Image (cartoon, rainbow, N blue to C red; front, side, top):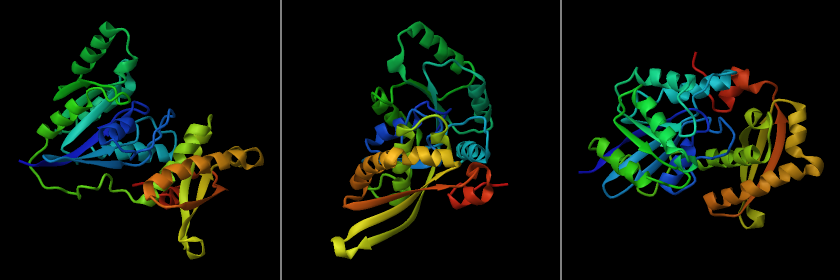
Length: 299
């Protein structure tokens, strides 16, 4: 019997959802960083085996919004709960149950979809008695279908989880071809790779204020069909623009160099990456710009 279905991965920011999906797929589908709220859109990752096809949905971290973009991100995550076959609720093994987790558990109580609890980052734990207490505190709050202690980074217990997920899914067809690992376009991934490099190379307010957009793509036949990708890095203030560009253009050059390597691996062909920085004041709170950048705010 062939099984297939959709699994959403939810949790607070920085618990390791994207790392988990990348590790399970053994492919880089979602960008990662040590900054909260790295994931802004739902990202699908497709795992196809001889006996099943599991479509993982990596979601933005659920948090208390401070702007309209934050509202969009939290809604993106919560809206997946009732449209999937299984919920993977991921938490950080180094943190105790708090208000943020209580909010998520309350949302889980609004759905009848089965839930697996994934307690991540156990590789950082030294006090295993405390870990047992944390596990019990979660189990006392909700009747989870399964509880797993894992390390997404070290790939601990991931094979067991995949096996249990497969058994939980219904009999069904292949929704996607065998070779497909995500339903997102290459150009969406290109913008994400650029944003990832900014997240990892900058600090303070920059990561949260940045967005990336492809302006246009053209094939240069005079240079052996070189693919020219022109992209904009969006920031909210002139001071942020200066930081992204850097002294003598050093920072934007570093961003481009690092992003280019990931894009080369993705597309499998030579590219020219042209980056520009634009200031769009308070874009995270303006419906027009959010819609233009692909963050549809429903009233």
